[in-house]
Image (cartoon, rainbow, N blue to C red):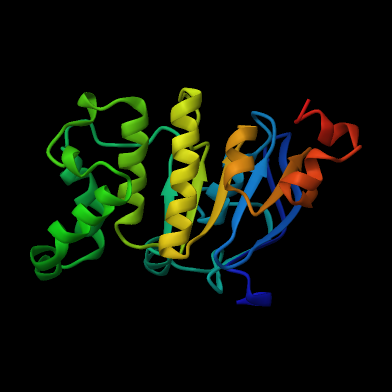
Length: 245
């Protein structure tokens, strides 16, 4: 891995027609680091993390994840890599017709063989639900859960394969302030237990303050600033100050 980084985004461009979302964007993610990407709505934050695991293609540049150039991997190799990268979708993306257990087991059906699932599925499902404080929900349906609980279940599903990296897409959007703070502290707990490295896409200043070791500011498609939360908050740059005023 280049310079020890688990993610290395180098000079990436991404456009949708005339809309230039990412312009020569570069960033790195170190092992066991929580890196927050701060930007206004529509600035390209979600596009960036989807490019990182090639859910959408990018136009120019390179992205290396865990030492692999994602742009040259075939679909089988990309699938193996994605199993090592958890993705918490903004919408949670739970299957409404499945119980909590079935939602968590979905990843196991794709990446474990039948014998592995028979011997180990119950244990890893319980561990993941315990990690997010919801072991009692195992047989519930998503419709029976609050918004905060659904977010926790989505995180449990992300954890079940013990990923090396987690990508969080707006993890506190739509949640009340107390639940948002609980989810933010849960992100820290996950980092500490599993030694994960994480990219946290958000415009929630409080979430970024709680979770981040470092912050990248995405402005006009570029990496406009790269520093700690405290240093950015104390910046005199008017474009940076706008996010904190």
